Amino acid sequence: MKNPIIEVHNLTVSYNKRPVLWDVDYELPPGQLIGVLGPNGSGKTTMLKTIMGLIRPDSGFVEVMGKKLDEVRDKVSYVPQRESVDWDFPANVMDVVLMGRYNPKHMFRRLSKEDRELAVAALEKVNMLPFAERQISQLSGGQQQRVFIARALARQADLYLMDEPFAGVDAASEESILELLTGMKAEGKSIMVVHHDLQTARNFFDWIILLNTSLVASGPVNEVFTEQNLQAAYGGKLTVLSQIADLVASKAFPLREKGLQDREKL
Amino acid sequence: MNEFYTILTGSLVAISCSLLGSFLILRKMAMVGDAISHAVLPGIVIAYLLGETREMIPMLIGAAAFGVLTTVLIELFHKKARLQTDASIGITFTFLFALGIILISAFAGQVDLDQDCVLYGDIAMVPLDLWITDAGLNLGPRQVWILGVNLLVVLAFILIGYKGLFITTFHEEYAATVGIAAGFWHYSLMSTVSLTTVVSFESVGAILVVAFLVVPPATAYLLTEKLPVMLGLSALFGVISAILGNMLATWLDGSIAGAMTAVAGGLFLLTFLFSPKQGILMRLKFR
Image 1 (cartoon, one colour):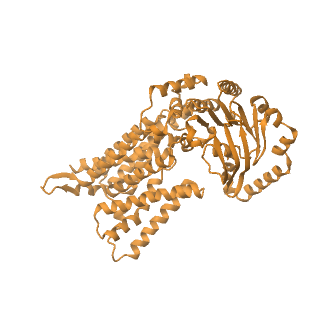
Image 2 (image 1 turned 90 degrees about the horizontal axis):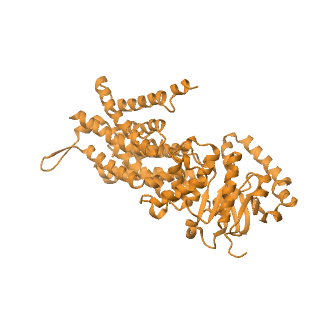
Image 3 (image 1 turned 45 degrees about the vertical axis):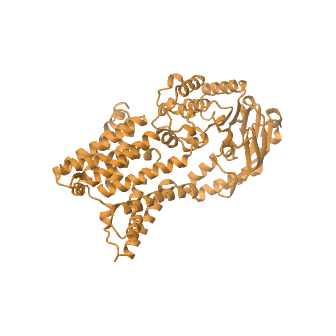
């Protein structure tokens, strides 16, 4: 592939010696809406976090725009899962969106007028400008999600990695987020989205990565959505067995239940 | 005059502690101050054994070093062993505190240290330890100067580092993806907390330090949803607790630190009941 936006090679990531990603290898074309799909616990979030340098892989490596992430960090923007923060934190919408303008080289400097203008523009794009002064504790799920997306937009990146931006949002928010992503793609941005819904994925994305710890398939949406691939990712005895294993584990060690849930999120 | 110095000491501790405590409770690490105030014991003993003096500076250094070590261990157990922070805090400070006790009992003959004195410094004693220059000039209580300098350090740290503290407290992981050194901010905050705890409990006792780290910030948290306002309010509640606490202690002729802590708790209770936004009474009224 020519000038891949993301390259992942022989990537293996484990958690407590249990592999979450196993020898994953793919390249992604730039300027596309890319969906990452797979059952719960298939390593989707782990993969995004590994690309963002939050998790160190056991083996393999990741390149973004042909370089190490640190060299192109300014051009990459990350939208974490909505549940990963405490929304009762004392901050308003503007405070959060402005975080997108924080630059590690200028941590002791005040934000500029331009930073504020970019934050306002980002809020406008997600139709949240009227809520700029609203406390984040008073937002609906869809609004929280749009605030996170606005924060990512404020970074003016070329590549966006979003973890479940459609999770728990109402139909109106879903539509406006999708519209926004399509618009960003038209501007030449590359967007990689972790998604949980097979039904909508076919219409949302140009390119699909199917994961189930190992890479099942990566390619244009029509090529990937075959019966065989979906069976490999979602069906099959392997998944059922691992579900039973999880169930037994959770019954055997009730105190660890929270840990298991966390692990599923990874 | 003594009363003035008591209130001043209490207020200096209150402001430093409640400003830092605001970040701690938002990071869900409120009890880290409690941990530090106990875990520094071996540091104090070791400093004493090495230096064979009860000079304050070596002891402060020993204590502060163990304070930082405490926060490093807490973070290590939390991140590497994936323990919950509260469990990790519990393990670290009981272990280090026990180490201190063992050191004291093992070297009992050589250590002229009173555990009670280390842990429960007495605010009533502060006005007695005056800083008198060689020329005979009376500059007031030594502790007031130390606590004043510490407050300046805390204020400078929060003002200069506000952005870093804000983003890493809100979401450490996101901060890391932007390229911000989350670890740097974590340990800067923890070192400042460690320093503040050490210099404060020496003058006012551990309980009051822990109370000021947690209670005024928690009270302010109930009243506002803006971080700068929360910082200001918690400092204010801290100072009010110091002033009213001193009055209460005089009236009862009782423990000053106890009274200040009790007032801080009382203010929290009042806020809990009557806060316009989250108060129980308001919620009942609008149900």
